[in-house]
Image (cartoon, rainbow, N blue to C red; front, side, top):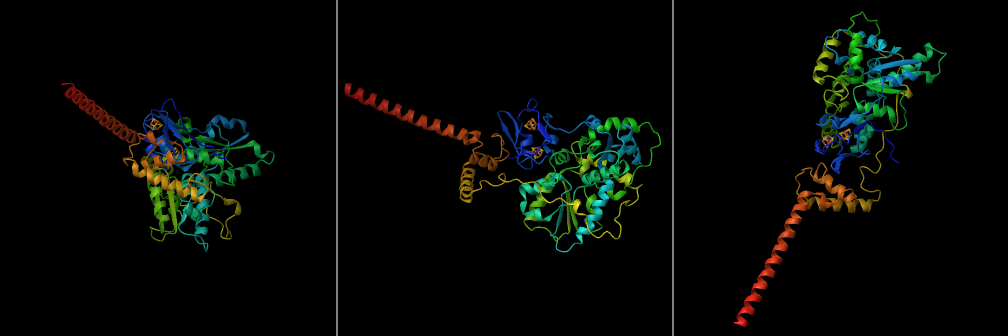
Length: 446
Ligand code: SF4
Ligand code: SF4
């Protein structure tokens, strides 16, 4: 049974059925039914694109609240590096970290610090013999789900290292328990401050066999105003930061790849570009590369739908901020020549039954033939009036039994036109016959 818990939802009262989101969803997960959008949960990858494009604000992300942390005795904040790009004239990350403590957290563990560890381990992994290249990063959870859903032949290429948020959660918990042996693990609460709904879904569901160590996810937009209030007090912050420009760079597209000190990489951002790149890798239509970094949001995590600022402005701010930072504060000890087993996860999410038409090969072939036949009969305009994004997806919906051929208004109009023409013809025929009969009768009677 399908049990994935999503973070992207529809407010049906606000939805006008305009089809904007239907056309933009990268996995063709949305249809219009009874006048409003419906999300197919098995296809949704929580990319947030529908939130970004809906002109009526009918799509929203559901995250936790800061109050959800009240149940814990020791509260740890994990700020995503994209948070630092939200503030104007920030020249010291400590203003943000200290601000988080002032709004109620006992401790802060930077995700950018964990990112530097992940970069160091990825450098090791790149030098491992026999790994399938290009290695594709799955730090953006949307990319991992997209590969599992649409490009399963690339699963072998996916780097199964836990993302920085997760490493940060593990390390923060460990440190807190070492510092406070009197507490049990349940006393410690870990809160990730997220730029996107995909990370909130990841925390709820884990990845296959791995369960997240994060307890609560709140959006950057939710903490922004409280934080800026504290930061504007202009008091000298406590020195807390332990990460450098490599870790902070993960907030923007290309930052993860740059931290590998290997120029043979590709980085792409924005869900359409990500889709195209994966398509080309699958078709073998790319030069030999070592590493591929993909971010579903434009500009990288700074472009997440739960942030406050324009991604390009946030990126420019981070460039300025990074000038004041050391290169990295987190290199691995020289003797550490292997990646700890608990830094890996084993499975990607499964989409059994979604991408395949049927579990029976003969039945799949029959359905495919029916889809192709129906596509031939459809106008091919991809107008969206049927509630599906394209005529091809509409044909698939009909063959799967999720729509009726008559839902296509153009097919319906053509059928109606033909019917009326036939009716007219038979009416004319009847009139002519009647006229002949009358004429014949008249002649006979005359
Ligand atoms: S974009 Fe989608 S959710 Fe928003 S109003 Fe249009 S159909 Fe409804
Ligand atoms: S979150 Fe992304 S995948 Fe899910 S319905 Fe919206 S656009 Fe489609």
